[in-house]
Image: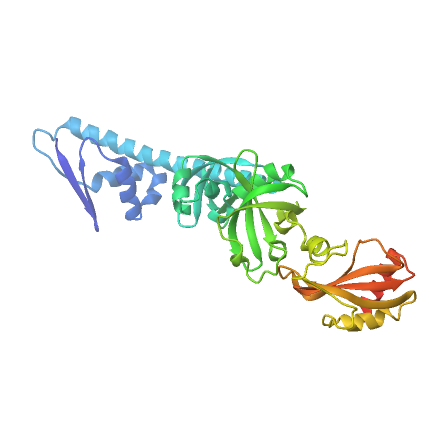
Length: 393
């Protein structure tokens, strides 16, 4: 079949005479800054014909060939015009889809988006004619918990082609930013199924200086929501570094202690599922039946036991309160673990005997039992203690 060669500037290509490539011609026009001809079919036809030096044999240079060329030239021009019209339609559709994206954002509706691909930072999700971005931190924790041995990019590769329930969290047509969150969509669905006091099996995610994030396992076996266990709620022991106790991937049991539905935040506790060492202090370290463990308890008339730091000043102020007649240390003991280095003081629930109530003071591992002789009742003692603690720095 006869061929022709066309060259303008640095652009050249080879094509079959009777089958010109419309897409190549469109690219050719753009590169030679002639795309404005798309609105002038007659000019395109004239220019197109004059650009080519034809190399054909005598037997092929017939009137029919010229006629075919002319018809094909016109067809090429019409194709370009149709492409231009399609581009306008595409822009109109894109604008409508941006409007839809903004509507989804403002309404908070959930959209089922198809994952088209991924890059180093997240997933590419289809939204009608648009493609938006779902950052990896906005993925539901269910994916990483389901396949803990896979990297985030391996997980992303496996999600290509799947449909994810997402929310639009950013839709800016001018800057071409369309951002999705699967976490927010999952929160809408599952946050109504949790309440303060609920106990969950969980898996530790990231561990920070201030606490650990724990993913909550729901009855379907998937980890849909994430809550924070603050460092103060990790253990009854004094915790200097959360990483000494919890590691990413650990399975734990947690209790829901607060829910902020407005900010989509869940606060969890591990230590509240364990018995408060205070109860151990009352029942074991300092038994309420009067028995004593020789290894942990020291009984005394009070004069031989040195008060805990700060306690002597509290005793002095207590004796200034009306109705309090005597304050003395009766015995002391040592706990198995350090709960707090600070001085703690509380009124025992043990029933009074002969107008004598029991106070307990604790600092570090050391616990001291204090006998308070008073005519006040339990509520009166609490108020007196409150006034004293306000006066003592």
